[in-house]
Image (tube, rainbow, N blue to C red; front, side, top):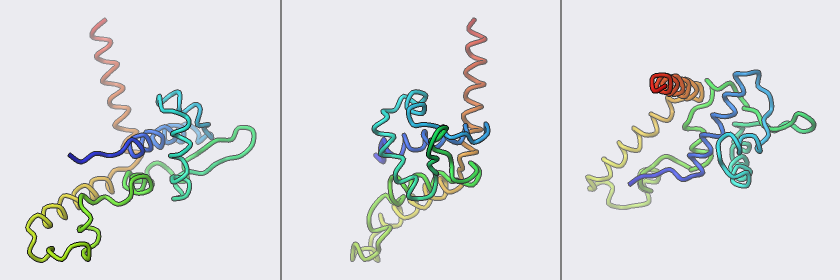
Length: 152
């Protein structure tokens, strides 16, 4: 089955964490705090932040009060950009991205399936922003609090 790597999953959580802080005044966040809040190894976060910075999704702030911030408003950063920076292109098979990869494309029925599925995933991730993820997170937190209240 198709799976995102931990790099993609943890990178999305890192970016969501920064997005939450962006909406609270965009203060710079140190990776140690993200590590504790998200329960992700600091060493792994240090590796993940590099491609996010290279792809201009985050900025580093030096000095006292330094850390990392989002490069743009959460509503302007798409999940597709994050996954592209960390995972590469969103294609199920190589031939979808590179038609020269296989000479059987003109007669291959499965090529059409892989191409359409890849496009569906790409479009879904393209239409989901960090702001959308913040809203999803808030809904889940409210639901969780309601369940806890009901159980008390």
